[in-house]
Amino acid sequence: MIFKRKLYVKMLEWKKEFDGKTALLIKGARRVGKSTLVEEFAKNEYESYILIDFSIASKEVNELFEDLSDLNYLFLRLQMIYHVNLTERKSVIIFDEVQMQPLARQAIKHLVKDRRYDYIETGSLLSIKKNIKDIVIPSEETRLMLYPLDYEEFREALGDRVTFPLLADMYEKMIPFGDELNRRLLRDFRVYMLVGGMPQAVDSYLTTNNLSMVDQVKRNILELYEEDFRKIDPSGRAGMLFDSIPAELCKNASRYQVSSVIAGEKEERVREILADMQDSMTVYIAYHADNPSAGMALHKDPCRYKLFLCDTGLFISLAFKDRDFTENEIYEKLLNNKLGTDLGYVYENIVAQMLKTTGNELFYYTFPKETSNHNYEVDFLISRKNKVCPMEVKSSGYRSHASLDAFQNKFSERVLRRYIIYTKDMRKEQDIVCLPFYMVPFL
Image (cartoon, rainbow, N blue to C red; front, side, top):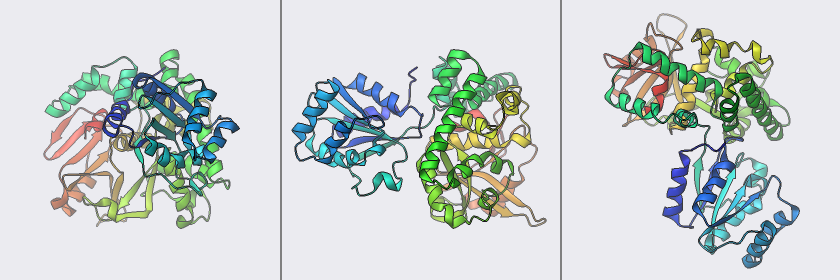
């Protein structure tokens, strides 16, 4: 099933604005829908296209990129091999899984200069050393990120084009929904959390309406990711770090503790592995902001961070991957709205996911309490108008917001607005805005 994706609009903008002066590079995790989106774009927006899937391309095709001295010959051979007629300025050539043929990516510089056709690349793990070794990375690339379906795209996939515009209007006017409607909206949102936004999982949900079948699809995707991690790091450390994300969040610690996952491992020794995992776009990293201000990226602590999964549906399956689906208590508790504080890290992951996919880098902040050995913790910080907005995530209703209050006292001149993200209806409490989870995309 082909789903409507917001990135399509940005792809149209690229086509119109650059008119072949750059190639378009679509980055994203595996199974996020890159190939489907790009081929649909090619079918709709060009007279013809050639799709070269380098995961299965023949030796003959791969060898064509070893010598670019005669582009006429290259285009002639591609048209003959793929049985497609190309038309100047009306056709596009797609390099799918381009990380598997670095020479094709290097060729972009010369192909774009030729200006006969447009070029679109898709790939994951694009910065892994073996995928860029001995090649010149082209500067003639316009890069876009494709994430799992966000909540708006998920609602549209379900045939609902009403809910999200309604949410946007209510957020703009800050009008509460009322308890009954809020419960229904949260119920719908919890289904999104369980299914996730991976296109195969959404398709399975739509065709089977069976969460057990959806869970199996997600487990298959997780196995693919773990195979990639074994290729990135044969020692198995990347896979161990990935598998332990739910457990580390469950501890409610102020950072991901590498030494508790890999005995005796030092932080600095896994930084390159973490960079590769981040490049795979399967994980998001929230760094501790040592100096919480509009320039948090300048003051992040590379040794203090939390890891989140790119998709909360995958996160739920990963949390119970060693158990049968029927033993996965998160499905039952989320569906019945009984997700307690012991499983609140699921909500933390969905907030991280939504913030990231709406263009925010992820930061958090901890600082010691004066009267005890414990810390205050602000779950997320986002920058707005040269100021910061601290955020607390509550897995149910809220009773207090001590961390937000302490942060306000400490950095009052830097704070634009404070947020509580929780399961109750939208409301304002003095200068704190309390929002249900489904409102996070509008922040």
